[in-house]
Image 1 (spheres, rainbow, N blue to C red):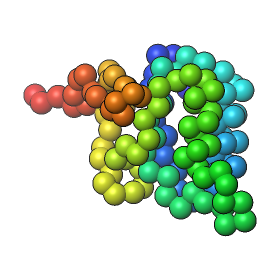
Image 2 (image 1 turned 45 degrees about the horizontal axis):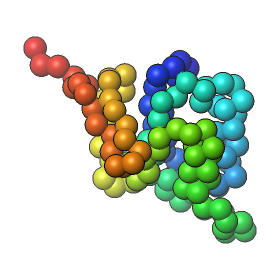
Image 3 (image 1 turned 90 degrees about the vertical axis):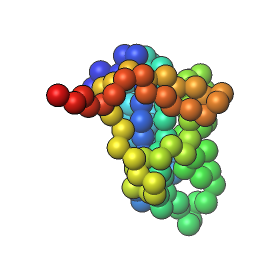
Image 4 (image 1 turned 90 degrees about the horizontal axis):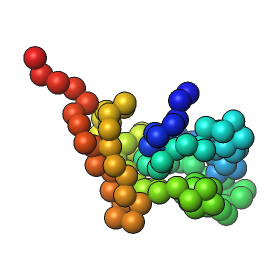
Length: 112
């Protein structure tokens, strides 16, 4: 997976926060987060652990990417929640963590 200059988009269903942390730490250890320019987070559906309610999944994600000093936008409309928009992968985009926006600079498909 080539993450150089990429905006990483993540979403999850049913994973406990510690497991999400483990997955992200694996990507970090593999160097896959080094060149990521930003992170967009979609739906984290049912990502709770009743035995360990703290930290919640969103906090796990925020903590890691704040430490890495990468722009982060939570609550984007993709994943297994609703709304669930189609996102054009491989297109150029700009992520603004301060404004909470992800803007695509080109279309994901073209008409002939």
